[in-house]
Length: 141
Image (tube, rainbow, N blue to C red; front, side, top):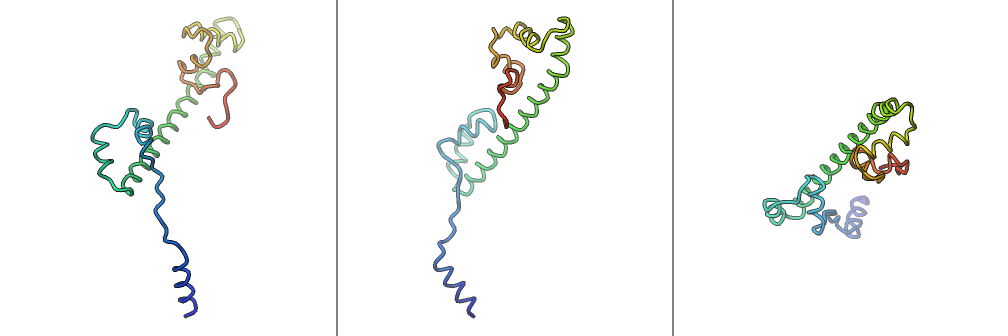
């Protein structure tokens, strides 16, 4: 009996739990583009506008999951390119140019891709993480 009274009193004191929504109407188009590669079309907007907050949250969560999966795929692709670059491309250039340094091989890649020495532009062309070739790569990127 005491437990029931204590629980009843606690329920009166505790506020009701309110659904916590994390979706943001202002950036949903940006998230959609991040997840699917293009801005949402008319069909998406009709569905979004007709949805209640619970449904919007479900749509939002699905887009977040897709964007996260896409980012993980992109990182894996970049890591694969970096491994190929280090294991195959740079050693082949070094061999072709009679034992040149890694920096010389990177200069050769600049010439090949016509990047005028812009290291970030070369990284873009090669499909590696920004900062990888320059050595300024930040942990976690």
